[in-house]
Image (cartoon, rainbow, N blue to C red; front, side, top):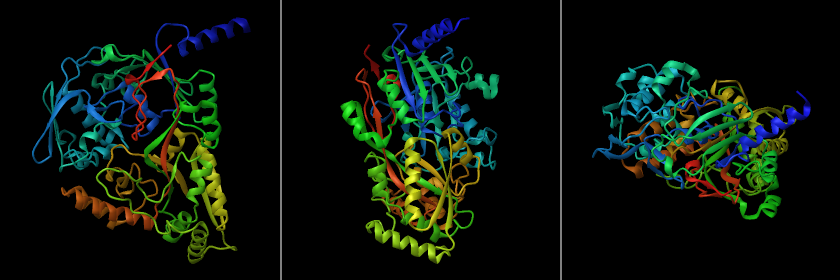
Length: 527
């Protein structure tokens, strides 16, 4: 085949993928990372969640505003003590292959994620379900967790204790169901195109690593008649500048992030197509407090105190992020004001002097510099941030080196217990409650406590708060727990997240929200 013919065929294939060769409505959507998995029980990243929420729907889901609304369940009843939820499924709901969706599908799914053999790193988010923690830790039977199919349309969930955020928790990707017959037939390959069966607005058509994921409309979805977009193409890209170029060329309809150092020029070029808004999350540097010298609290405090967060947020991130001085961002539900770190209101010079003094107490100085290696997932914004951090630490006498990998490799390294000194990490709230932040560093949280932080007083406050029904007393306990973190500094908060995107005028129905969720089924596109 000649070079010309090969190029012609490639052009036609690309045009078909981009939606220019047919009348179907195609949404080309950037995604700032390659998914490691599409198994809802093994997923943990925001990039995976976007895709999974398009394909699958839980009992409760998000609307266009990021609010929790009925999903596969049309209604629910809650017992007077707040410990039992009875969900009634919608009439006639189906999987993409035509099988009826039954209450037993959710029983199977909740049991599967709690089964230790599944290896779900995120199972603990569902520990409020009665018996689930014991089952997940191999101390109880999977069959005994508090999930029961009363009949095909009725699901009952029992909790260990009343949990004020439980319904919103069910919007998380860990509560998305899997199709039992497909899992049992295909094993780990049940997530491949042709094998994966979904119950949401879309179904999986193609998954080409490092290229794209193609979703097509699921005609068996109960709300299919209201879904305006036929095909959604997700394009993974951690190079935000390249993402902008593809958007400008018309190859993308939306981006899910922007190069912060170009924000001024982006606003000038694209004007109101640039969408900026708050996002309920924190950008961290996780410290491996299980190994010297980072097990010395003075070292961790010095590294935190020596950061000029205002400079990073303003100069590196173009004010799309806010300086972060607490573990949780302001505005988290069921909480008061955050517990801020010491020296929050000191000047940069005062903080630098304090940091140098702490390092000196810990045995470091001009003749013995502290050596630090930062691991981070490669994006323009992350690279610029860690370089700025290293420059600021250099003023304290700290020598910094870097290890950078793609996002999939980076997060897998952390989840699998890989070694590191300091690692970049970001946390976006799964539900708006302090527990969804503080649980990350609980000593028994093997899936997320990457730096192996262990403080019995902190753990005790979280355990106590978990059984406290008085929301005011509970908030006070969790405030004390956060204050311990701001003293021990196992994770160094650097910034509070903001969301920055480019949204084409062709895309209608986009609503900026603090949860950062933008389901494709609520969007439409003009040609």
